[in-house]
Length: 65
Image (cartoon, rainbow, N blue to C red):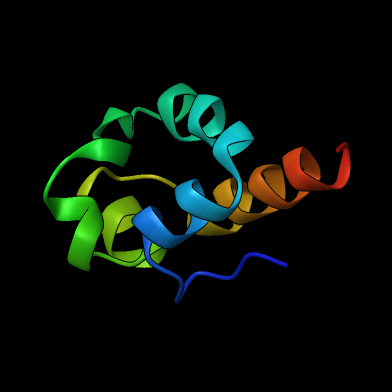
């Protein structure tokens, strides 16, 4: 299960299918340097994204596989 404290990089490495979710939310930086040290909550806040919606969508994406 994905949570807001996980790093973006960690999630993308474990679940590459989440890249499209991050991109849909405007977090195309899934492969950038910020993804190495930002957790999902920090990335969402910087981009003005509702972290709960993002986490819910990420978890739905990994449950489909």
